[in-house]
Amino acid sequence: MTIVQAWSVATDVQVTGCDNEIHIYATTLGSSVEVLSLVNTLNQPVNTTIHLPSKLQGGGNFTFLIVGLNWGGPWEFKVAFKNGNQVVWQASPSSPIPTSADAPPGVAWTASLGFAVPPFHFPEGTLRPKA
Image (cartoon, rainbow, N blue to C red; front, top):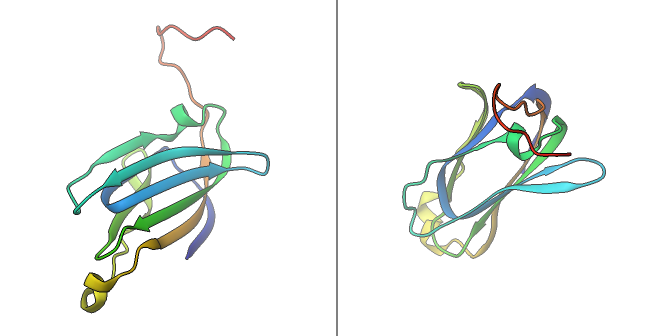
């Protein structure tokens, strides 16, 4: 398990590899929110980016929990947290090559990361939801 408590600013999370399933949660002392849930078979290409301030509108300090699930056989994940275009953390764990065909189903990889997310600001001139 990877554990990072950097409190760097992160505005986006990008997943470019997922075999088979990845879930990312943002947690605080009082709650959790699923930021991303992605299912992919046979290591097909993926490129999914989630804008964190729009998911976590109030902003603040969050612990992000990443869980990568394997259905059996080889597995691989590629995840990056970014502040704009700058990568502030990335990982690309995968099953060991000699034993990848025999990798059992279950939780293949986890990580816990601390990031500050800025509050969401509506672009000038857009309609805002009523409070």
